[in-house]
Amino acid sequence: MENERVILDTNIIVGFLRGKSRYVHFMNNIEKQYRLSTTTINTFELLYGAYKFKMKEKNVLRLKRFLSQLEILYFDLESSEVAGKLVAELSNRGLSLEIRDIFIAAIAIRNNAPLVTCNEKHFSRIDKLKLIIPYELLK
Image (cartoon, rainbow, N blue to C red):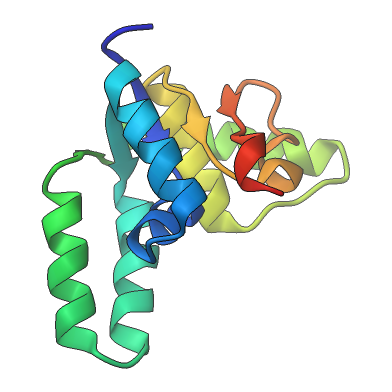
């Protein structure tokens, strides 16, 4: 498990940056066990949120400082192929998922890295995706 990469979903990063004690405690523990990363899709979601609300400059600066400590994984050609397959598989099963979540899942699958998320309901639809659900944060 040491040095295994995990991908932090947007909800994990937001909880941590907002200083929610359970998220801070969780992040302090997980960073000792894993290499922390996120995706360009998550960074988009985070930056959108930072620019949308008050205190833009402060939020953006703090967010960029945090993101600079993570490995950022990109949506590349291989990820786009995985995403295409995922959309087709979900569609064949009569299911759908927001396209950003498909892209995040595709990057995780392509990089063989578990996604750390509180959004089990959506991501559990994707069979090939490894998830780490921090249930202690869901209380």
